[in-house]
Image 1 (tube, one colour):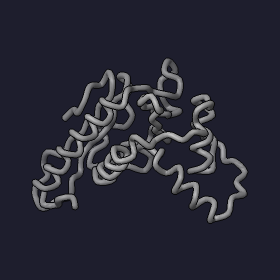
Image 2 (image 1 turned 180 degrees about the vertical axis):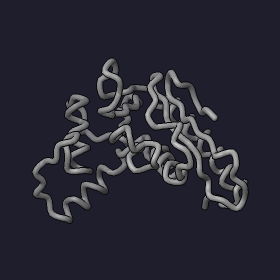
Image 3 (image 1 turned 120 degrees about the horizontal axis):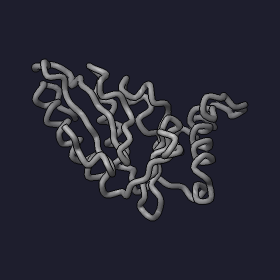
Image 4 (image 1 turned 180 degrees about the horizontal axis):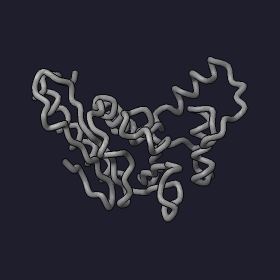
Length: 185
């Protein structure tokens, strides 16, 4: 199933065809933005519940995926800030991190909502970390260091296709989970 348009934003997903109730929803998933795919749709039997929860969180937070401190940052500086606050890295390079556990916990609470696709399932393991922000002008930016060189490290789309695609995916997933005997709460 394709929810959305690959040229703007879409979620491509399927439940493995042989699954029958009772079963968790195992399947395949990737996202498309500006005709660029993030995720490995060929990766079979991925747990889709983490992605479901992740997309629910993105949808709930879409209007608050911005902080004033982001305003004057380049895409690379924004990437580094989020990577530092959430993972203690700048790309593949660990940075000196003298934060206390309380500071790390606070940063996770403050910046965790900008995490996108990372740790959402095996299908996203090969594409590196992704972050998502939504500017006050309602432009969604997906930052990922593994994008094609022509895109740099950012994909851009207006907020409406993102929210519409996520809503359609969530509705589909809820139907599939219910069909398989594991309805979402």
